[in-house]
Image 1 (cartoon, helix red, strand yellow):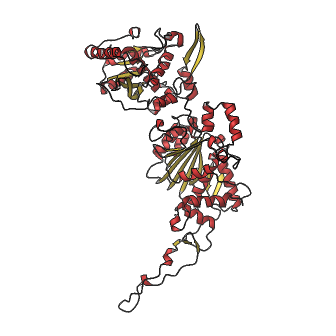
Image 2 (cartoon, one colour):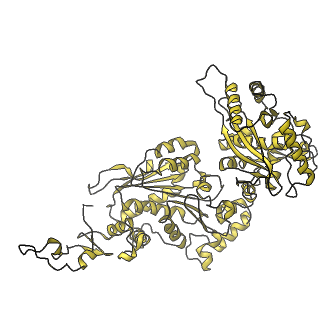
Image 3 (cartoon, one colour):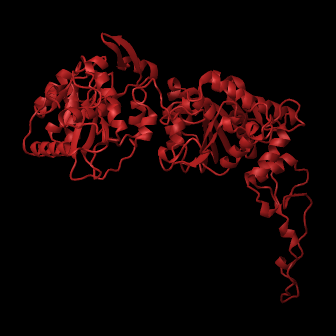
Length: 625
């Protein structure tokens, strides 16, 4: 496209001012009649002679030619471009507008961050494909569109496959004159102008990035350093992408170097802690939304969802858009999956299951329902500061994690544990004169000192290689530290105040007792301060039932199995739940079955606090209340 000037038609509609004579009788230049140049008049603008209609629509879309100025607005011009490229006249491929596609377009034009929860067959991939193509064509020399999907191979059947299909159809329809060349083998639509006017470049165009977790380093390296006037990241199947990829995008792309950055992520909802759940997090927290809501403002932008039960076909009572869910098809899915199953909620309700997962020890639904993410507590008196350390076994194994919390009575008369922070304790490889365990022990002591936590209010896991570490910590700091063994069999304590079954008859081992026992406290709303990183680990560990001597026992997934399945170890959750178990055993923290402490329990707690403030002593697990 040659360099051309566009005029406002209103510049020629205003009559010139009356001539003002100068000394020699010549009028001023600004009072001379304005001659309207030849050109194409449209939308209140005058374009150079021969400007194609597609170019006019793309220009008006990019500059958001308002209705008040004679245009159609960005939405109207976008639709016109789409109709020109993939309307009925295109014999290869057509795009048919439907209510959900229009809603996606409306919100995409309003928000920098947009998350989309869509049921299966909701048209997300097709809409993202034409959005990518049209946004790039509107300013091909200044726009880069990054498209992420799980893998290069799987992307062919998802959004990238749609981009290829729509691009080829548009290019064929336009006689090969669109300024781009598709290179399917590397997932790239690069700038390459058949007229020779634009110089070929990979700094602009549309590029596919594999976002699967095992290739996150390669994906992140492609994001770092990308700079363009218009930069758009379209994340398809966002729930299955690496969290690090989205974190890198927000920190490296949303900056001054990219003044017009936008991120749009679409997925079938899975977890509130995965990347899709992260950018969909409501501004008022997860308790502020419900399955009846079709949209809400998020912490970053906006969220929309498309529930199959509210499909345009179902609302109309007839099949208008055959590719969208129909009443008959949805009824089959209800019978096949069950209307309350997690899969039905994810794939067809397009909402995070309110029932939680039966496979995991702790469910997301419980963390939301029982306000575990809340970090504001009104204390009655001064709470106790306590800490726990979950040491890693080797320098190449798990992460050593220290976790702190406040334990005390609230003004409502309930005992609550509020997590206040955690920290990974890393060794310094350059300190070759000091063994690793000594370094980690010093760092845990500093972690506690910084928070004014006395040694009698600190504990650690001494199972496995933790035993020698515990010896070192007690030698460097104090013998008043409590040692808790995550290994071995469960204790003979009652499962709860209401369930008199012995823990050793219900739980396969001690670590299962520690994890499963936390659920009662969560459901009694006595756990607060669970942040997203802690929450995702708490809700990722699975459990299974197995036959015991006197009935079924439950066992949590071994750490090694979880690491092999998720590529992560629950180190934050182990430290957090170890701290909760420490509070239960040493500080007489009991689940409030009736919601508040009884008079006897309150007196016992106050007496215990007074004793703790006066005398430092160690309480073994065998003496735990």
